[in-house]
Image 1 (spheres, rainbow, N blue to C red):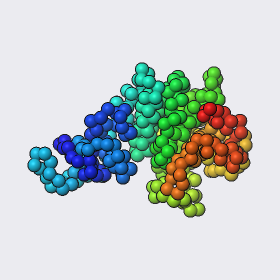
Image 2 (cartoon, rainbow, N blue to C red):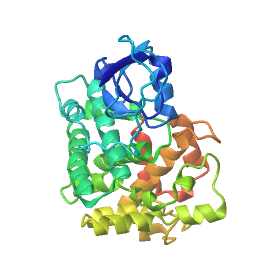
Image 3 (cartoon, rainbow, N blue to C red):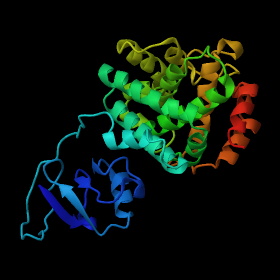
Image 4 (cartoon, rainbow, N blue to C red):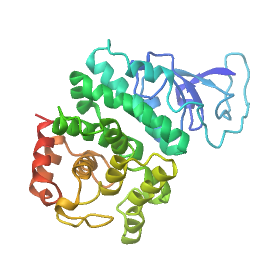
Length: 328
């Protein structure tokens, strides 16, 4: 049943329907369940006065009277809302629409990728991973073929640090850097590279969520568990029969460092594949530019400056120089 309520009465667990054009708001779709306080805050700051909710798909236990005189109705919220699709048809159509202006298409591609990764990390089944890779291929194709949209993607990445947001940011940055490094070469499977970069943190689905979502810095015990995620990601892709050589390298090596102080194997120098080196640079850059409870986000310039002056021994210097040129 559809009901219109005051925006201030909206709560986590409700299924909301936005009447605005998809391009006029910051959510991944026009219809969705409010999963957390962050969604709720964004919705209440959207400028809407009222909003429509579907009481058959989400929570509805708020004491108020609607325009028909009904009130005090209660519905038990679902434990977890699951879409029957990994990504909405609306988002996919927008992302594939090459007639859109580059800025609008970049937003569409970015939100399309966010929804893929958010749903995939919520349910990393073999079927979803296989379907997710097909959709990721479409994002990769856009980055490779549409230079203007690719440039715009660099400008709209989010600075929160949800795992799905980080996955998309690292995916976009890594594909852009790979495009720059391997342009004109037919020896690299860019689809599998893209899949590896977008899926590089799949293993975090096997790490305690309290560690993933901890608002402060991790202690040594928590760090040790977090450092298992490359191998956990390897196992997830292996079990799904999606562990190509490119994916294996990226998932296992994106935390290795040129000076040998990375993990999980403490590889050094040329023991690290260029694919792993690319993932490492993108991963660190996105971590620095993300806002956390214990630190503010850095600008791209500030992050690159720290990487060059304080962390350069972590990276392959020539590849890092090419990464910097993405922002020129």
